[in-house]
Image 1 (cartoon, rainbow, N blue to C red):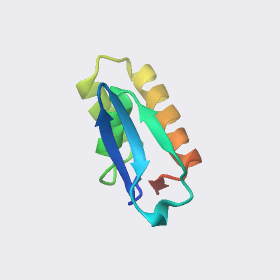
Image 2 (cartoon, rainbow, N blue to C red):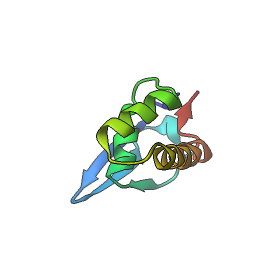
Image 3 (tube, one colour):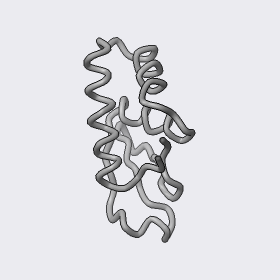
Image 4 (cartoon, one colour):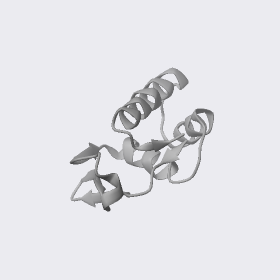
Length: 88
């Protein structure tokens, strides 16, 4: 899975937001605010990754239990799916 084309991650002060950058992404109206972990996962999903690959990357970067990392990744991916932002 990876992020669909037409979306960009921006850093505004201490916050991260995802915005639409072209007309092809018209079904997404607005922006998504992300924390630093969400921004890290977003950046990793610029290229095709499996959940297992994401899990390894998150565990390497953050001090989380595997259970917590899986939960966080699942919640984030569910949100991206709900907003139709993933190519799978």
